[in-house]
Image (cartoon, rainbow, N blue to C red; front, side, top):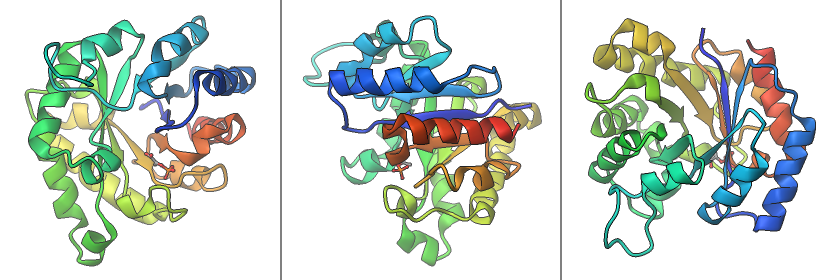
Length: 252
Ligand code: PEP
């Protein structure tokens, strides 16, 4: 049985005070029931101070990005060792905004995955097609390439979560239908089985991301291969984030 994960990607939002207020709201409304893993991914500057706010709760902390080296002369970058020391359990790698806005390519993502895992930080690896690619019926080819360029049999699947995030659904208000999401998730699980075997692929969590809201989360979570959500816009308000956590709990 896979435990759903609901992860909030704050992106480049919130000062420390705003972040503290949001965390206080999440803590106030969150009833830990052990059914769902809850994760918040604030900007780098908030990680350490918010880690202290999360002490004594079951809410985990993650980062939105990492560099592919442990340390060195890489001005402006943050290493996985620093993330671990700041209290992070997870890091998001391969988010479409980093692929498409910052130009990150497969080789870099491949290195990031390995250096994060070596430092003891688990990986949420994002993949997804653009609208143009979907309309050209290339969705499966695109996500397969994104999968194999960064993951492989040298990676421990127990320390990886996939997040299928169609680019056309991120921040647009458009959401994949449950049928569209399920089809890609099932495809990804089959790919995972080819690399890691049945037991690992059965245990692999595959999140859906792309305009998940309180009112569409439940239908997405009922899909057999959807194991939670990576949430952008709706995670910036405690009420909507908690409603998505609730939908994940109800799906178990
Ligand atoms: C995301 O940033 O990963 C995301 C899915 O954003 P949104 O929920 O706003 O579409």
